[in-house]
Structures are given as C-alpha cells and as structure tokens.
Image (cartoon, rainbow, N blue to C red; front, top):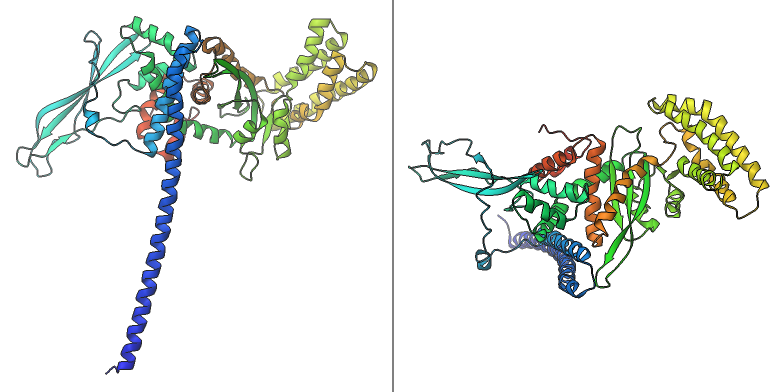
Length: 521
C-alpha cells in the first residue's frame, strides 16, 4: 500500500509536471500569437502602402484633366495610371483577398461579344462519366464562357463549353473545372494578352494606338481595359523575370550599360531623366539572356542593388562596361572590371573624322589589328581564344601602349587628343584584360545592341508614365528580348507562357525561361 506521504509526493510531482506542461503550452501559444501579430502588422503595413499609392494614383487620374498636357501625353498618362492601379489591386488581393458580398452581384455584367466574330468551340468534359456509385452519368446541360482571342489582324471568339453530368441515382453533379487563366474570369485569351504586350513593349505601340488598330479589326477595346490587362500581366510575369535575373547572376561574365528614358512627374506636368539599365550574358555564353532594370536615376547604387552588392552572396564576376563612374564602387567589392575596347577606339575615330587627326588615324590602325584577331577567334573555344590573343593581340596592345605614352609627352594639356589618349592609358589594365581571359569579350557592343531598340521606342513612348510603369516595361522587355536572343518569336513565346503560368509550379518556373522554353509540355 502507498502511504499518505508517498501519495502527497506523487500528487505534487504530477502537479509540477502538469504546471510545467501548461507553462510550455502557454509559452508556445504566446510565441505563436506574437508571430501572428508580426505577420498581421507586416500585412497591414503592406496594405497601407498599396492603399496609399492607389489613392495617390486615383487623385492624379482626375487631376491630370486640368494639367497642361498634350493629348498624347494625357493618353499615355491615363493608360499608365490604369495599368498601375490594376497591378496594385492584384498585389493588394494577394495580401488581403477580397470578400464577396451582395454588391458584387449588383455589378453590371460584361456585354456579349459581337455575333459576327468567328467562333471556335473548346469543349471541357469530365475524364469519366461514371459516378462513384457505379451508375452512368447523364448530361443535363452545359456552361458556356466566351473569351476574346486575337491573331494579328483577326479577332475570333473561343467558346469554352463545360458539360454538366448528373447521376440519376444519387444526384451527383460532375463538371470539368474552369481552365486557369492569367486574368481570372477575364475577357482576353493568352493570345490577345501576348499581342498587347508585344505590340507595346517590342513594337513600341502605345495603347491608344492599339485601341484604334483593334477597332479596325472589328472590336474596339477601351485603352483603360487594355491598361488593366497590362498591369495584371506585369504582376503575373514578375516571378519569371526574377528567375531570369537569378539565372543571369549565375554566370561569371556579364555586360552592363545604361540609357536615359524620360519619366513623367505627375502633378508637375514635367519629365525628368530616368535610366534603363541593361545586363546580359556574352556572345561566348550559350545561355542567351538580357535583363533590363528601370531606375529613377543613374546612381551606382542601382547597379549594386541589381548585383546584390555588398554582400557575401552578391555577384563577384567580371563586368564588361564603359568608364561610367557608377560602376566604380562595384570594383571595390570584389567585381573584376573589363573595359570596352570599342569606347577607346571611338575616341580616336572622332578625332580622325572631325579633325583629320593623324594621331587618331594611326591609333585606329592599331585597333584594326586587334579587331582582326577578334573576328578570327570568335568561334574558337576558350583556351584557343586565349592562346591566340596572347600570341597576336598582346604584341599589338603593348606597341599601342608604348606609342600612346610617347605621344602623350608631346601634346599640350587639355586638348581633345590628350583626352582620347588618357581615356585609354588610365584604363589600360581593364581594356586589355580580355587578352588573358578567353571568356571575356573585347568590348561592350553586345549589350549596346540590346539597348538600341529602346531608342526606337522612346520616340513612341514620349516618356515612362511612372516608376512602376518603367519597371513593368523593363520586366516585359527582359522576356521579349531574351526570347529574341534565343531565336523565338516573342508573340509565340509570351502566348505560351501566359497559358502555362497559372498552373506552373513555382519550383518549375525555370522551365519557362526563354533559353529553356519549349512548346512541348
């Protein structure tokens, strides 16, 4: 038998265990509550930020009517604000899903598509029409959803027909699920969305021009609607652009350059100079990729942020660039500088063309010899390219350096010739680094060619409507131009990935990158 002392000890021990267990449970609950509070506070901060930005844009949309804008400027501003508002709304919905209420049921229904447009039926039926109870299902009706499709110059209508099947015994109703779309319950197909994006960001057609083109094709689409589609697609495509940037930063040699783009400052009726930064792999790299990054200034912090500098996990390869000071801080953080031979040559070419300079003419002869070697070694493998460069380019480069040094001593300070010579001498190590590294290109012309189409677009854009609009343009152009680099038709590429994105697992997003893309699923 257990005496009362032992019983008291046993009860006290059980009490202590129970109390400790409760204390641990309460501590865990407190930690969970604290964690939830932090999540709620973070979400609320994001919601407040997005809500504030949306309120500012809505005020600008109505205030713009009284600003002294031209009709083209006003149109571009309107479409930018509409696209930004749609993008913000989707970001807000991701943080705070909208609550359905009676007001949603009272919203006006979309007008039916014109009956004169050609229609193509796409039927969706269950894989099996046998009920779980073993009976054969009977078809009792169907749901039909019409979506507007577009192939260059021709509108068609896709009729998605989903049959309804019911079991006469247990009254089980079966119907194929609604196919996933980039814009849920939206009017456009992936083909129409791809057309709008390619026209805007590859062919540089503002939405008000596309509105007129679509009207001639048989169905007018309001530019505000087009802008909402663009904003929605920008949000949906962002994970793919982030994956493309991550892929780019896995490579040890990159080109970098930047070009100015005017950005509107709503409220002031003026523009200021923003910049589109471009980063891409080299022509020696089988992975062809280019990523554009839009920033509101030319500050070097934008380049460092893109490369993840400073930081242990930041990019630390060789950056091929010009002598712009914004890149200099990167070279103090572990990035190797590779100069642009074409920029150095350009200085002497200007001397020869503008002033018939004999020094400029003689310098160009050295550069001709260096570029003859580059043409010959372009298709060779890395070790052979390096060997030939060291054998043939190194003597020419050494002779050029000696000649430039000698000419430098003979000329007065401050002359245009001195500036051209100093540009090369001051960057000599960076300019000739390619000779000892077969992975490095001799110049930055490749990335400049990627930016060149942007100059064509500037005359059509007039300006970027906002920072968000510029960043959205940079994201879509990254995909469009990377698709072109890999030999793809941008329209076919965008159409396919917009069809796949809604159901593509995040872990397999890399499969949709332009250099890995295949139309075979």
